[in-house]
Each structure stands twice: as structure tokens, then as C-alpha cells.
Length: 123
Image (cartoon, rainbow, N blue to C red; front, top):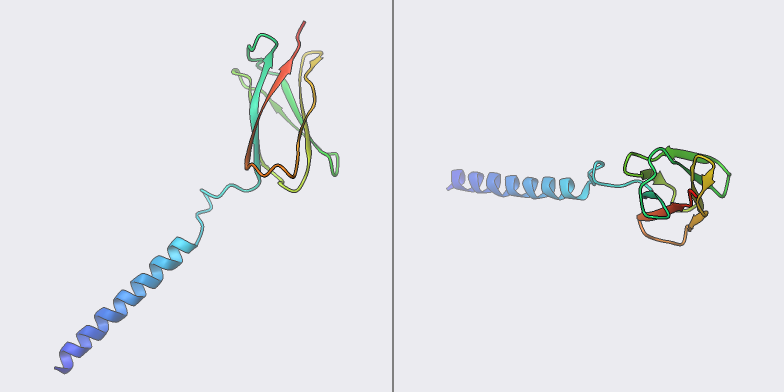
């Protein structure tokens, strides 16, 4: 009878330890899945909706006026990951001597991903 109790205690203890381990593993966030900050992405297009490869996209932090740039890909896409959600940004694109309108990304916009199309009049 003593042997049976010892085995039962070992099984119960093992189950409790396994449940605790599972709870800890599921509570710890996977750093690969967690996005840090806001993602700003989109396309740079001309007036006829054709992509403008090699256009330069400018993102200005309105608090400290720092500027980040990105050269659009062959399909006109750009991407700025990990922008602060607590800061307003101004965004525009430039292609050769032509510039798009400036758009704003507000700190009060709670979307984790913001998609903007920047149109440049190349005429």
C-alpha cells in the first residue's frame, strides 16, 4: 500500500509540474511574433497608379525632427518598422524633382500597421 501511495504522489507531482511548465511557456511571449512599435508601409505611385521604383520616402519624427529614409523597391513599396506609437510622423515621397503631398501618422491612430499610398505627379 505504501508503494502505491508513493507512485500516486509521484504521478500527481509530475502532473502539477507539467501544468506549471505549460503555463509558464504560454505566458512568456515569443519575441519573434511580438511586433515592437508601429509598422508604416505602402507604395509610391505616379498619377496613373504605376509604381515609382527608386523613389525616396521620407519619414519625419515631429517631436525631435529626425528623418528616416527608404528607397522604394521595383514595385514602389516602402517599409518603416518599429516606429514609436507615441509620436506623430510626417511622410512624403520624392521622385527625381517631383514630390508627393505630405501625409501624417498620428499618435492617436491606434493601428499597429499603417498603409499609405504616396502619389507623385511626375508631369
